[in-house]
Structure formats: structure tokens, C-alpha cells
Image (cartoon, rainbow, N blue to C red; front, side, top):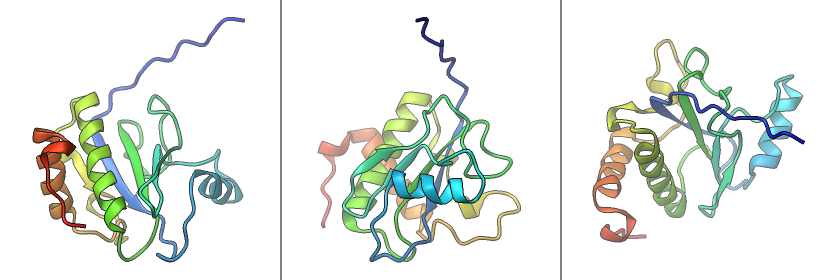
Length: 153
């Protein structure tokens, strides 16, 4: 059987989302995939999901166009933290590390790590976090690596 050749698309941004589920609810890729299928979509729209305990689960392949930010899916990776109001400290940390790793892997500049609400014509509050603070932490992790950063948890 021949393997299908995967051609990597050019990725220029990371778009951060929240699941808009209660902070007390821990769901992952399986549940979000089901939610998206119930909406009539082809499956989970995000590339990565960060559970409440900080575990990172893989959604769509990076080479596959996402379905998470209308008009911006063709050249972005979608990352979703589970919750609505406040990411847990493990989620916050893993979000920063994942974004720094993706920036390094795809040559993405820090100003291209965006909250869903920072996109043109988006009126949602998603991802409900301070993106300037997140970008500051990502910048430090990107420069010094996660082992070079002290974090109070």
C-alpha cells in the first residue's frame, strides 16, 4: 500500500482559543470532535487542545487546514485551552511552551500569536485571556527554553 505524501502548508500564525466550557469541566479532543461533528462539521477544528491539567492533545494534523477562525484557517494553527474564565497554571504554562515550540518549528513571529478576538471582524471575547501577558511569557520561553524560566505556580 502506498503512503499518501503530506505536503506541509505555510503556517504564519497561531490562533489561541478557549473552549467556552465551564472551568470545572475537563474535556479533550474526543469530546470537542463530537461537538464539532454534531454541528455538521468534518470533525475537530483545532490542531491542539490543552486540558485543565495541562495535558496537550493533538487534534488535526498541522498540515491539515483547521476550522477554527473563519478567513484565517489556511495559514494558521488553532490552539484551544479548555475552560472559559481562567486557565489553570499548568494550562497557562503548557500553552506558552506549545506556542514557543510552534513558533520555532514554523518560523512564526511573536506578533503573529493571536487571540481569536484579535482577528479582523471577530466580536467574541475568546480566548478570554490577556494575550499581551501570554506573548510576554512565550517570548521568554522562546528565547531561553522552558528550563530557563522560573514560574510561580
